[in-house]
Length: 114
Length: 114
Image 1 (spheres, helix red, strand yellow):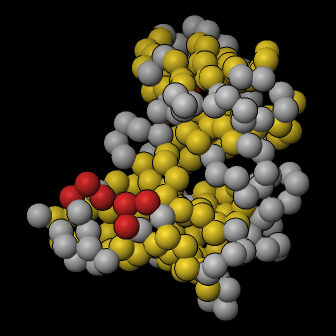
Image 2 (cartoon, chains in turn blue, purple):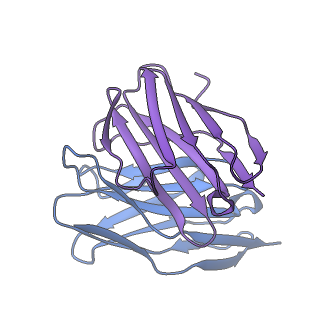
């Protein structure tokens, strides 16, 4: 069984300050982990993915995430928030079985204040 | 690459009517996923196909919902008869099928059943 918990439903930051969106997971197998972003009235777009290579993963738009097995975490960070980063962010775990089971977190809504 | 294409973008219908949502996969992708998104329940996987074969339809709410892949690049999700509680945004996503391959989402169909 697998699960993913996004620890904050809403995060508000000021433009130019760091962003931290937290995600914890559980998985019976060696997981693949993803972060997706959803802007209003749009589908989900892949930000980055971890698939058992480097533990620090760099994504698009300056985002990165670090896989920490000991903490079962995959937090998303960005050094400096931009107004265009305001969106909903989803953490996703896949347990890499042939059955292709993906589990989505409940989402974190990021607000960026001017 | 045009991405995953969904139609229509918006659908408003009356209770009891049949609704058909359409999805065109990215060329070369062989896995197809239908999701439903609501404020109350977040993202829910309805069904997914691999190589045109339904692999897991356990998320399909009830017999009123059916999904097909008449060919490798196209899928439909049908609701008959529709009910107000079916109102949601329906997303289609495709991938190359491997468990660590990211999903590529369409922009969704916003369904309103009155």
